[in-house]
Length: 512
Image (cartoon, rainbow, N blue to C red; front, side, top):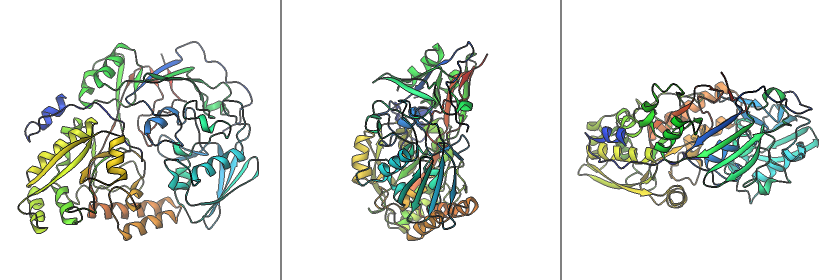
């Protein structure tokens, strides 16, 4: 599971009246070198809040890995474009058998890795076999579980046979965890990544920055990088991020960490602010196997105790989109279900009483140290108090402690975290998973999604899945975090929206 990077958080004095004020205060094969660009600025310093723990997205889950390497260093058979659509990449085309079980890919010829080794069907076969192996540590290993056999009949043909239809197979092949890796360098990619992308790895100064340079032998002439050098600089303090942007020490922060500071950039002649969308769904997960959360009425009552609009104002300075299920407006088949259990404290209290908790209820919430999580938990604490529920906040270090206690051990009552994976509504069908939610009807709907590649059918089925979650409330669905971008006005080509966590730089350039 990939989750939102952590930010510095401000402690807020939590009362109903002061919550908001406190929160606000706190293609073609290329057979030669890419021509050098005309004179002009060709370097970029891009800021990120979190430094990745490694540089191989096929062995590590944190989104920061892909935000540095995906589509910059590494590429896949398919890719996801800025609109969230599947596009060909190292596979130039494919056919799917009528029964949906056999995918035959035509691979691009003349593609080489940064070390000069060739990409062909044997490499693609190695990559997928590695991802699905028994000892695989691929963060999305489950998405390769439907693969039955892989064949490489010739250098430019890859045949993947599935055990059962998998409607989103091409989409998953476009994820960071599915990028192609060379057998010669795969073991060292975590430190010295070697891919086929438009940029080559240069160096990593841990605690400070990662440097890339243009790949002069990139296979796709039309999509060759316009920048010669890129530096990813890691700055985790929001005030320091703002200072670096204003001074010009950093050219761009595509994901600025402090919404309460966005207004400070207004009127700056050198900077532009861009509010885009993401897949970051902030949800308060509940342990459905533990009392009182094994009673659906309690979960529904807690949902009605939450004023999403007020929570967004207090937790993220009003930036965010309320949601009523584990789905975002970016995704196909989205339905606005915030009206399923709208804010209604009186109905919440009545439902709690019906469930046997009329005299009160107490439980704890394990909260990562990130600002959005801390602030959201404090807002929930105040709102729950209004319906007779006492919420105790326990700050939990993320990722290590949270992953150990909540994600793996399931030792928690309630927690809060932002789920960053696109289209990850299927997590509620996984067993085990930290929600401990089990619903055969929901699982059946997702099986039907996998059985078809027709987008209209998938959209309808995803709508059914959303409605089941909105009714059952295995987690409190709060809001989708926005993509708060701040960058130099002369910089063009950065993605405004984020259908997948990334910093795609091949089309980025400076203009006059």
